[in-house]
Figure 1 (spheres, rainbow over the protein chains, first blue to last red):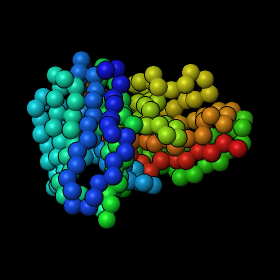
Figure 2 (figure 1 turned 120 degrees about the vertical axis):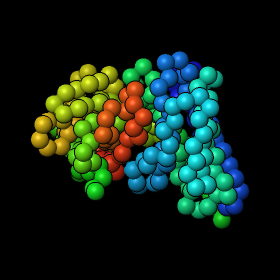
Figure 3 (figure 1 turned 90 degrees about the vertical axis):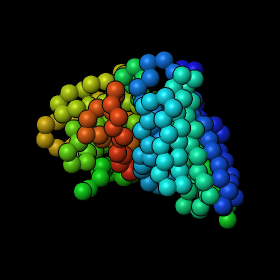
Length: 110
Length: 117
């Protein structure tokens, strides 16, 4: 993998359900993996910065895991709420460059 | 503590004009990054600057685009002789130290939407 890939591109989830999505990144020369939350008409806001293989981070109902050997990170949202509707971006620091994925657009259905 | 401030929020230019986008980083931040978001695309890195220095401009088009971060004042992204394809949202982010090789998240401004007529 040469680029940062996120899947799915878009996701509809019923309010109250839990969900997760994936960020795949180049595993060589890895420095850090960032997750951002981006609401429409606002600026991206940092959620997590992860650096170590096996890292797990948690903030409220949102958590993330990191596998640097195989080059993927999962973002989990437990008990989705309407305010979770946003685009979730991941970005990889590699070879002195930061590369963003195109994001997963999450829609929470009432 | 004010966040990253970008202005203007919206900028309309005619083909051939110049566009100047400004970014004031968060207080205490000395590292600035510029990104471009084209329709249906993600954020594309353009340039990384510290005060008075361009650290990495590998994402910047070779012609018509330039960036600076002077000792005093905001960072400026300048686009000369704009063309239709320059229409995009331009985001600025700042960090207290280099995110490259570092663990610092970037703090983003609300972006400037540039429209070329």
